[in-house]
Length: 301
Image (tube, rainbow, N blue to C red):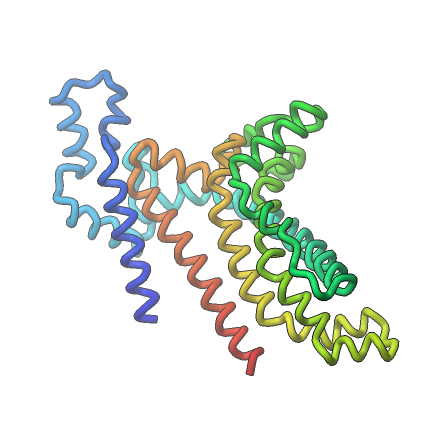
């Protein structure tokens, strides 16, 4: 626990320092280029931006334990409230993306296993690795060109308003979900495909096939137990990748979730919002990886 707390403090300090290194501040955003230098100084004083950086960081960290998480430098609203109205849309997007990625990984692993049985002396296919290496913006552009420009099946942007429910119009979810799910599924397949092939080619699994054991029973008794630990760790990585991928997908398609809020807050130098979103994401990812390691350790005994 001490190591986790120190890690979160390091993330907090790094995020805050990175924000301070960017040019401009929230006062420049509020001024919009129409306020005199004296007016900007007054804005900074009212927002506490004239305090030393270390003191502002301590205040920002302390605000996390408060009832409202601090206040946005732009709107003055409680940070928990600002994020809370966007969070449900992001949870829906992340949940659907993870489900689609899990299904894609399952299909990819089945194809990998089938290939391993047919050609056991060849190495694993590099298709999943190649697809996983495609940057997410390229995936988004390709999907938009195909499904919007070429086939005219979907709207090019989601245009979900802040606090809106995406389930009222599911079509706006398709492009963001695919943009997150496809690279995640390819990456998970690349990580897990080798373990699937090894499990299918293990001596006891080969012997079971030669004795005519049904494929379903082989998968349950011989393959699934060998994949339990790797699958848990791959799932943790997939959840982390999905969490990180929401920011780009939401900002690309105009989907007003917490990821899009993070991108906007960085651009407008709204430090309390950026800080809470970044630290919150670090808590989620660290917690998932910790749980996966603990469960995997118990299963592996």
